[in-house]
Amino acid sequence: MSDAILCRIEDGLAHLTFNRPASLNAMDFEMGALWRDLAHRVTSDASVGAILVDAAGPAFCAGGDVIAMATSGAGGSAVAEMAGVIHDGIRALVESDKPVVAAVQGAVAGGGLGLMLTADYIVAADTARFVSRYANIGLTPDLGVSTLLPAAVGQRRALQLLLQDVMIDAPTALDWGLVTEVVPAAEVAGRAHAVARFWLDNATAAFGQAKRLVRTGAHRPFAENLADEAATIGRAFDTEEAAPRVAAFAAASRKTRA
Image (cartoon, rainbow, N blue to C red):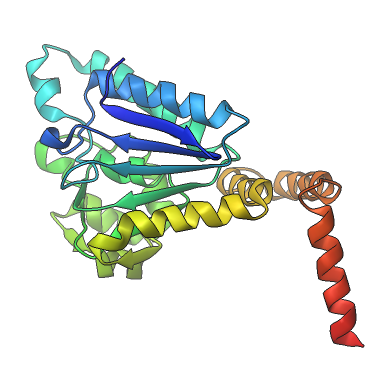
């Protein structure tokens, strides 16, 4: 099996690491297929409660491997097919009931933005940089960028990134809502692990369902979302995970009111 993405599962945490540092972790055809397969593997594994995505080397992800595309002899139909394969993996993560945290360093470019935005919580290094550059080489957004980017930063700012040669730094990305936290580069890995550990040490399933409701709710009728919310909280209420927490909360509330 290719080592373009490393995967290990331990104590409920699935850890995916982009591992093509010499290519700034840009996705070629092989890496794209591996991404899809691993995304389905970790989201369907009942032992997994949370997912962490990070990258080896100086960059998080430079998007699709344009050099590999240009030299492989592949035409547009092959590129479209491979985009569909990667999209399958993105959907598996975004629509799952597993919360995802990303640890982001260095450059995030093109489709790397979409891969980063599959995460529900993004911890970025203060040295990280974010850029589109699709149109600079005559290409158009893929890997969920046309949907996930405006959902994160709003349509106007998404268009600013896509229609101008703009690179934003980590503080700007935080201000725009592109990332969740900015920390010193040396602290990114530890902070991302702490976020995942918080989910796993607490009501893991509830965090996962909250993520699922928000992610899927953006694309459904309001009435359908309300019905899903009602059914989900009803299922949660009687679980072993929720019952003692609800009882403890109620007891503490009674003492406060007394």
